[in-house]
Structures are given as structure tokens and as C-alpha cells.
Image (cartoon, rainbow over all chains, first blue to last red; front, side, top):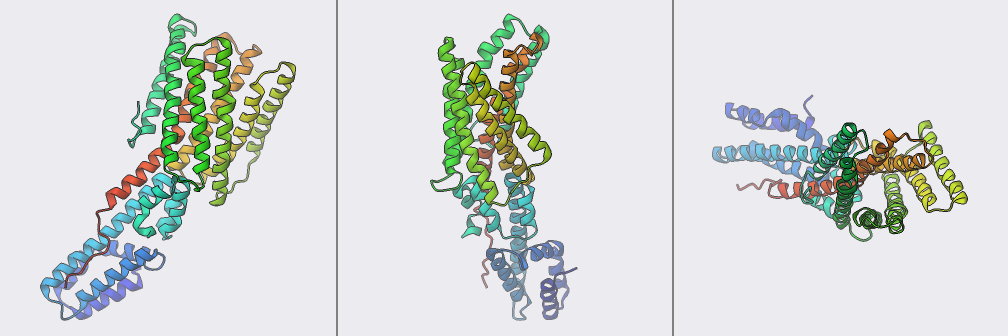
Length: 141
Length: 278
């Protein structure tokens, strides 16, 4: 089922720009990836992830705004796509690395949406604060 | 020799240890256990292996300890483990590298035995406390209690044996009993993590302790004539995988630290938050 937030975003998008290029934009966003990313980040993600979500929302609002020019629209679509794929890609790398270091139990916690800060505590305990900070530096800040 | 800065240290260690053990087994099968060649294998190649792996254990332990800062949970634990590794290196070098007389050799064995094991036991105490703090609490199963009872019996027999003929061997027995108990607790805690390099590190120590206990049992059985001559080399060969496991412990954790810092470096240039220029 499509998460509520995705439905709202796409409804807004289609209402403001009921044009074929917008429908294409929706397809370009790789709905499955977007859906997965939003499901993970929306409610249970850490503060950084929620900030990212807000960033994504702002971008989508700009896309949806009637005054947005076609050139800007194209640019924004690219930014949304790269932001979402970078976020979910990085998170997948993070989960894979955590599985390799701390095992599947910690990785499962991350997959289920636990904040990386919780996993950081375990990383710091077993590998030291320096390694944990290096690994999850931006998330810990 | 595996590079300490690489990402594949433990794999290389296992490869070298596997090759060395295979060579020993092939020679055992080929010569039937007694030959000049087999003697050369144990006296020279075997000694070089034990010293090299004790050195690598110390080098990896030093590297891991550097990852921690004073005050952190495992700083003291890794300090104790590192001191234990240093003592093992000194003891192994004196006992096997210098090829000394029996008295000096006994001193070397005492340093690499009870002293090094005592430090390891102290270090593992901190590790177990950390596992408990992180919620990896364990309940021993019936088979665990059976093993613990076996260890206790071994320690008690060591103490009784010491009363009959005083030696430092009973200290090793008592320490091994304690270490085996810790190893069982550690194995149960680690199994809840679902794999990973941290779990591999402590599993390597568990294996090393079990092999050391087995080697110690082998010495006792040989002393009382319970081991037939044909099987005697098996009681010697066991020390090689034990030495390799002791080195693998810190090597796995060193790899985890390497992975953590390298991954961060790789991800650093990626921008997470898009900047909108409109």
C-alpha cells in the first residue's frame, strides 16, 4: 500500500501539473524506491533522516508550484531523484556494513527503522568512539 | 605475512595457518609421526609459526587498543588482552625461539601460559560485562553446565596433582577453567548477534581457549601415558590452530575498525541534502 505521505505528494503534484510530463516525472521518481525510502524515513527515522524528508518535501512542493518554470522543473526532478537514490543507497550501504560488523541483529534493527544512533552506541562499545563517529559521523552530529 | 593495514588480514592469517597445519598433517601421514623431517617441522618451522603468530596477535591487539580511548568500556579490556599478547610473545620466544635448557624453557612456558592467560581472563571479564550492559544477557543451558563441571573437575584435579607433585601447572588448569567458563558465556552472548566481525573476534577467542584447554588436557594425558605414540603428534599440532585463533581475535576486530573508518571515508563526499538553486 502506498504510504499516505506519498499519496498526498502525488495528488498535489498531479493537481497542479496535470500534464503528461508530470506523469512522466512521477514515473522517473521510481515509485518503489520512493515508497521504500519514505516508509523507512517518515516516522521512525532519526532526526537527520526526517530533515532529509523535509528537504525532499520542499523540493516536491517547488515542483508542484504553478509558477515553477519548465527549466527549473526539469532541474528539480533531477535533484529529487538523486536525493532519494543517494539517501536510500547510502542507507543500504550503512545497513550492509553494520551487518558485516555487528551482525544481522543490529542490521535488522536498522532495517526496521531504528535510529542509527542506537546502533552507534553498540558500534562505539565494540569498536571505540572514534570508529563509530567515523562511521556514523554525520548522523551522530 | 598479512598486512596489518589491509582489509583481509584474518583471511590471510587463516590461509597461512591452514597451510602450516596441512603441512604438519601431511608430514604426519607420510612419515608416520617420527622422522628427522618431522622433527625439523616442529623444531624450526613450528617455532617460527608460533613466534610469528604471537607477534601478529600483539600487533593486531595494539592496533585495536588504539581505536579506544581511556574511559571507554573496552579500553581496559583491550589493554589487558594486549599485555597478555605481549607476554605470550615473550614466553613463546624464550621457550621456542631461543631453544634454551629446560629451566629457562619452563620460565618461557610460565610467561606464555599462566601469566598471559591471566591477562586474557581479566580482559574477557570486561567484554562479558559489556555484553550484559548491551542486553545480550545469557542463560546457560544443560550442556553448558556439563562443560563447566568438566572444567571445574579439571581444575580440581590440577590442584590435587599440585599437592602431590608441586608445579605451576595447576595455575594454568585453574585459569583455563575460568577462561572456559568465560568462553561459554561469551559464545552464548555472541551467538545472539547474528554473525559479523565483532562476533567473529570473540568467537576466535572462544575457539583459542577451547583448543588451549584441549592441548593442556593432551599434555596431562601424555604425562600419564594415556596417549599412544602414533597419536602423540596430534597433541602437538593442536597448538598451531590455537595460536592462530588467538591472533585471529584482534585481527577480526581490527578489520571491523578498518571497515568502519574506510566506509566513512568513502561516503564523506556524497551530499545528502540537495541544495535548491531557484
